[in-house]
Image (cartoon, rainbow, N blue to C red; front, side, top):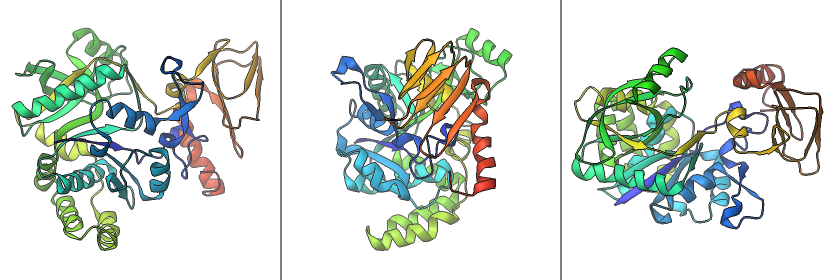
Length: 370
C-alpha cells in the first residue's frame, strides 16, 4: 500500500527569534488560512498544512510524521488525526539518511510491501490538487519500475541560486516522469539562468517516492552501519524495550544526508533514479523573505501580527503577541520581528545571516534565547 512520511525534525534557525529550539517553525501558526475555504482569518502551521496536503492522496492512517522526540507531544496536539503509532521520534538529530531510514524501517514493519512518499514540513504548495496528481504519478512509476527512486522536481520559475537542480533525461513509460540525468548543486546566477533557459532542469524539492524496502536495501549497500543499527531497533519489541535500543543506537549512527547516502550512488545506475515533473507554486519556507510571501501585504510591507507603518516600504514585520504593536516610520527594506523576549532587526538583504546572528547570541547568552 501507499504511505507517506512528513519529515518535521528541523529547528528553523533562519526564522529566529520566532522559531525557537522549544517550538520550531514547522509548529508555529504562521500560514494564513485561505478565506476561499471558509476560514475566518486565522492561521495554521506548516506541519498541519503538510498533513492536510497529504490527505488529498492518502487516508490519515497511512500518514506518518518523523520529528525530534522533544517535539512529540506538540506534534500530536497539532495533528489530532495522526495515529499515535504513526509518530516516529528521533532521540537526536543525525541528518536525513538516518531519519528517512528510521521512518522506512517502521513503515516496512507495518507493511512489508509499502510504497513510501517522503515530504517536508517546510513547504507551501499550491494548488494542492496538482501536487496530489503528481504524487500519484510518482507512485505509478513504481509499478513500472519497482526498484526506482523517484524525486519530485519543481518546474523553476526563476534562476534561483538557493536550490539544487535535477536535469531531466530520457522519458519513461509513465507520462510526466523522466530518468534523472544529473543532479546539480546550488549554482551561481549565470549557471542558474542557463538551466532555466534550457528547459531541461527542475528544482530538486527534496521530496521522494520509493518502496520502503528499496531505500533500506540502498542503505545496507551504501551505509551499512545505519542499516545494521536500524535493524537492531526494529528487532526489539515495540514499546519501552525498542525505545531503549533506539536511544542507544541512534546517536551513534553516521551523520549524513539521504541525497549523499542513497540518491548520489543510485544515480550512477542508468534508469534507477527518476524525476516526476511537479508544476506548482512552491515555497520552501526557510527564511524571513520566504515566509514574507505567505504574509498579508500592507502599504508595501509584509506584515504578520499588529503593525502600523508610516513612510515605510519593503519591510517584513512580525509580532507574535496579539497585544504588542510594531510601529515603523521611515524604515525601508528591513526585517523587524518582535517576540516576548527578543526584538530582531536586520536589512532584508542580510536575512540569510540570521542563523549566524543566533550563533553570536548563543555564544554570549548560552541557550537562554535559543
